[in-house]
Image (cartoon, rainbow, N blue to C red):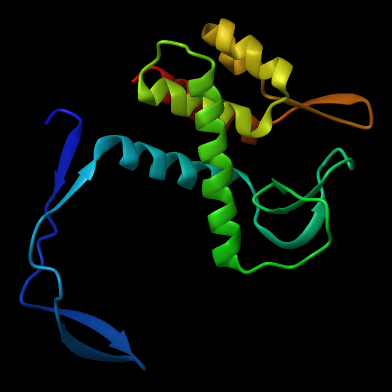
Length: 171
């Protein structure tokens, strides 16, 4: 049971919610504890962190390099279109799951949190940069730069992102 966490949703018989600025009492529906896999919680936290750093655009846009059409949270596409926020969330999870699978296919003997850390790094790095991190995780924080107009810039956003990934790697 080490990899399971017991989430006890302690509800009182009633809880309050706001409707039209008035407090209305509503009965709870859930009365049993819910058991959730710890790995799933880590994955949800990773998705939350990606959302913090990737803006969500519901219409097609060009990536920062101006080369790839994207939509949602950086999902690659080939067509100009519009999607809902729900579809953007679905694409984010699918894209992240693909990156987790790609890490698993590398046949590295890694804990799940290390796999997640690499999948997060893969989310916005080139394949070559990803491979360098995979080989030398101690150099993780070197990948905080971006290029625009041929010039190199240090990004505080990327630094925070790499720091989160590194902490995840060290769990």
